[in-house]
Image (cartoon, rainbow, N blue to C red; front, side, top):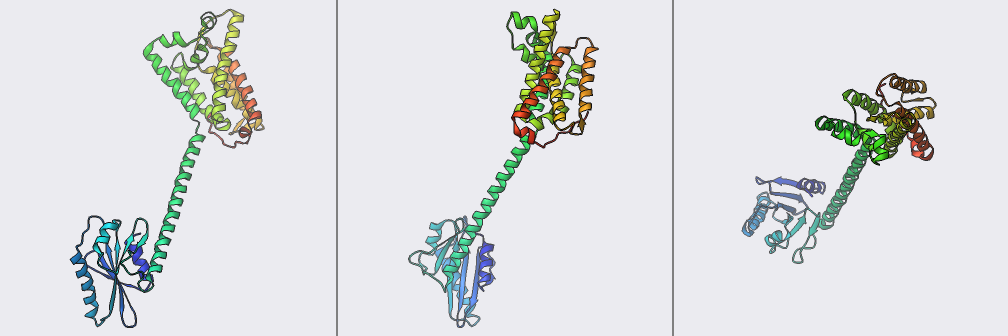
Length: 357
């Protein structure tokens, strides 16, 4: 409860306010037929102190105020607003006409040596304080609900962000920067090599090679495609399915590359996220087809042309692992189709990403 709220309540009950030159003291009065009822309100806050003599003098001053105006029957009730109940009790322990209002809990405290009522004011004051408590609890509930809703909304917005794709792009960039400082160390340890897989059983190279790139051009071309296409695909299929599609496509690209090298007996060391990136392109293709040939302002023909052109550039260029590209795009296409059939949420998801192709 605040002093302003009490002021408003007393005004509604027909009391008139008489301010003083000290903000801690104010009194309200209401004229009856032959007498005046006065409420002596003291804001007995922490750090404020008034002695017993000052308290008695204050009430006497109020009585004199009305007697000077011809009113000789003055009934005064003190209302002490204080969170420190013991301190307030000490002040008015000798006064039967003194009640305490506990502002933090909105409670009216009347001790046994004090009057139980003051011209019907007790019930009115208790109802006023009860309504304040109820209103405060409702406001707290609304505030809590609002904060919970805001938190949920923030989590929901975060959940809609393509953070898996962003994390993949950032990881590739960071590892490339590390490679510039470590020379051939990471390439020797992590590049894809059929002989190292078969003879040394270093199967981890299937995974690590997806995060290594030969040069800045190789990195930028892969990451630009991954960022723009991957954002849209992840928003449609979800975070976990997107990660599965990405890594299975990269692994599939490595398997196709291994098969090609074993058949042709041309063994090379290769790096790059191209297999996984082509897998995301394959995922994009089937999503467009499943959306009846048009999705996020793309048509099936446009996506097919993009994939075909990328494969053509690979076949006409030297030092490009085309087998990994083919393996990746096929795996991305198939796995996304399986997710579409098995996960109803992906089919019902209406979110759309932004593509710039």
